[in-house]
Image 1 (cartoon, rainbow over the protein chains, first blue to last red):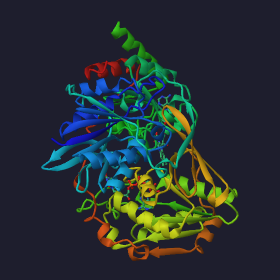
Image 2: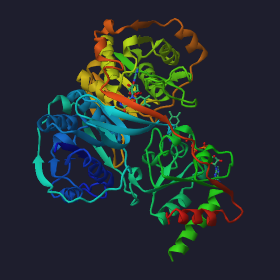
Image 3: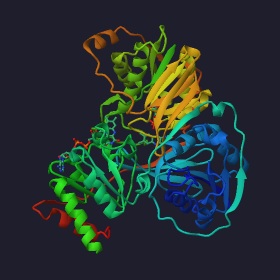
Image 4: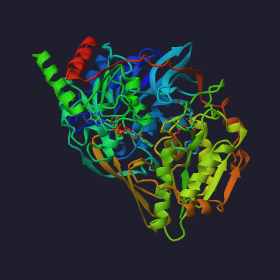
Length: 325
Length: 265
Ligand SMILES: Cc1cc2nc3c(=O)[nH]c(=O)nc-3n(C[C@H](O)[C@H](O)[C@H](O)COP(=O)(O)OP(=O)(O)OC[C@H]3O[C@@H](n4cnc5c(N)ncnc54)[C@H](O)[C@@H]3O)c2cc1C
Ligand SMILES: Cc1cc2nc3c(=O)[nH]c(=O)nc-3n(C[C@H](O)[C@H](O)[C@H](O)COP(=O)(O)OP(=O)(O)OC[C@H]3O[C@@H](n4cnc5c(N)ncnc54)[C@H](O)[C@@H]3O)c2cc1C
């Protein structure tokens, strides 16, 4: 069977300098098995990382660990250069990448380098005859499209939470690469990195529960955070809340923030502007708390409460704690 | 120095956007406008010129690819302060995918001859966020994307330094010019065109180029040459209206009950 390259998102995080493998990467392996034999490519993971074991357990026949300053200290160009070499060597049936800003850019460069079509923001991928076809949701969720890649090696960037990762133990043979990359690919240099403090909550983009606050919080996110913690979820924010300086930009959900598709999205004090919708419309269940019964968010909510979030959220948090006993 | 800003003309997100029978974007159904995320790039270019950071001879050229209507996107950019516009328009471009679009943009940028290329972080219609990377790859330019702050030093042969806000860290990235920089909506507050700006825009030059003018073979772009093909575009059925309750002291309890019924708690 042909190989399928899976680009693993294992960038070192403040919580794990070893480069913990994100759930979204295991999802990619599960999807990749529909197309061929998954080969996981891990960038920037230092030695001793726990990545190979987790990847092997989820179907990686081989794990290619790509390290070195050439890759770590630059933006995306070296990664696509290395991937282009792998594509040439191994002629994979497809390359699956995370549909993150970085994953999409790597895919873009790789497309040009390898003469391949690219589909981003896929929520599903499958073989249709011998074509790779990806499903995506566009125009803020009003259309579902299916796109085939008709030239080169299909490059598909997939959003998190598209499938449940399935364990499927495979060999997971480790190959370590410290490649040299061209001067040109190194022309954008990261000259400084200021780590952020970790919140200790699940990663927003792949959390299965997200509780978000908007302008309606009036600057106090404590009730939103408490409810998120009671549900074991991540905290999101609307752009209005971020612009006001109430919450960090990295927690923004929407067109210019994170795209999330959790099992549950709970929007508190968020009106539901189209740009916000664009980031959460693929959520399975949407719950809204808003004091304005006319707020557009109710049109897409499976369940809504018209009322004041500053009393409803704490009461809900308490009720959840009581049920948990 | 010459700054080129890529601007895309897109259907207004407030309207009912959709597709035509050939699965290309229906541009008749909804009015088009300058993609809002490109306004930040135009604003930044104009600020770099106004502040003198781009040198005394700085010039801002807005560039778009699209049908004749796409002139409107240029018009807005000129009203905001760009000095000149270029529209690349050719029937053969209709239906291009991201790869095809990036080819046309790259060839047009070569002809413009910019020291700095600014783009938005993503369009508001296709929204792929891949075109800047593709264009940089084609032109062999350093690509410095998602800038929340841009600083220039040393003029046309100098360097560009940006700050970007990532998940785990805030990064400072540097590259020498010429370079391509994409900007986020955190970078500035785009201005509304002033009356003076609107009047001045009428006198600014707009060139129109075809594929022949930039040396692109029509066979390499457009729907038939695309490396991806939309096989299906289906309007999503309107979402079933959910339950909405009004809080009378029991809102939280009902909310948790609903979560429990969905096995979410
Ligand atoms: C190019 C562009 C990109 C954008 N990208 C994004 C993006 O990525 N993400 C994003 O979110 N937005 C984005 N926006 C902004 C978007 O258009 C909206 O302005 C924004 O989402 C509004 O945030 P909000 O819902 O918190 O605020 P508002 O629209 O002001 O809504 C606040 C809501 O809170 C309710 N409320 C007030 N007090 C209470 C209370 N005590 N209890 C309960 N409810 C209360 C109000 O009834 C209201 O519905 C973008 C805009 C543009 C132009
Ligand atoms: C709903 C939808 C889904 C699509 N999905 C795919 C897909 O999966 N794969 C694919 O290959 N194509 C796809 N396309 C086609 C693709 O969007 C166009 O080819 C487009 O011009 C380039 O991609 P983008 O708009 O997503 O650009 P982005 O990469 O999001 O744009 C980033 C920046 O590039 C600049 N830019 C982009 N296009 C132009 C332009 N025409 N003129 C000037 N500057 C520009 C702007 O500065 C913009 O802010 C899709 C189109 C639509 C409408």
